[in-house]
Length: 231
Image 1: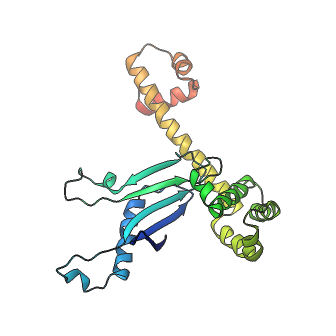
Image 2 (image 1 turned 45 degrees about the vertical axis):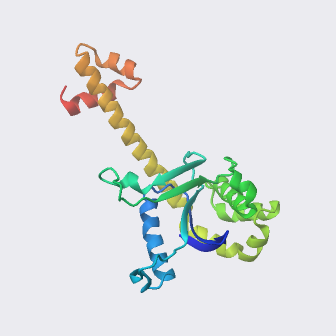
Image 3 (image 1 turned 135 degrees about the vertical axis):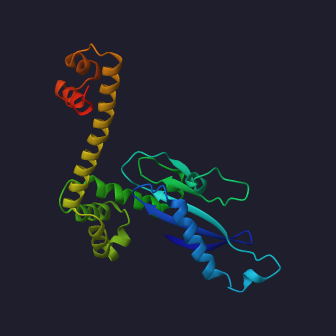
């Protein structure tokens, strides 16, 4: 999490920004802890005991998303969504704006911030080679040729490569994709089992073949589900 204090129209604004390739639904909780720590550093410890109001920088929270899964151009996460009970009048609230900076989304922010736009293009290039070995080296070389973060990559190319390698490896990426496929298959299996169960209970005279045809699955999957539920 990176943050900085900037002055806008004579008022201090404390801006928190974080980049993520996956949307973390706990960002509001994390930001609540971040801003608390920041205020501890920025505000004198004795200030809380003053009788006069202590002015503090206005916090703003952003997450820049460039992952592979489909996400809206913008969305707002609210701390109150995590509350076990509905928020009361005296409850605290914190909102984080999630901005999709994938280059194919063409968010207005990319047009206003050239560095962020080039960073988005760089990540897209890395992703283009993700199924190949030496993906990061190929992406760095192509971006330098196309003038994308070229000055920075010329100076820091090896550091960028080492940093990304620490977060990404060809073998690990394949393992993650396989794991995600298994999890997706497991979810689909649960849904299919529930559909088979409901259909058998509603139409007990249907044959396994008829159920399979109605649900678009195999007879073996129907038989397995019926054995599991004993129906």
